[in-house]
Image (tube, rainbow, N blue to C red; front, side, top):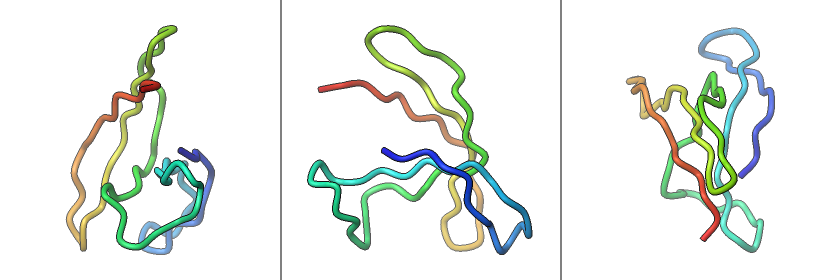
Amino acid sequence: MRIEETRDDELRRYVRTAKLFPLDGLPRTPFALPQLHDVRVIGMSQQAFTLAGVERVDTVEYAQSWLVSSA
């Protein structure tokens, strides 16, 4: 997973995004989940953390949260 500030051309501003990558670190297209925009950490423990934000699929945006834990 990578969390970074990127330019969103549709919104015409910078947003914090979260992207998932395979274990080997090589980006692939398509990937299972779209990136999460305007991401923020809403909970964290020693076992996991939760991110919340917006996923964009085509032109539709969906509020989403990801529970991230080590396997």
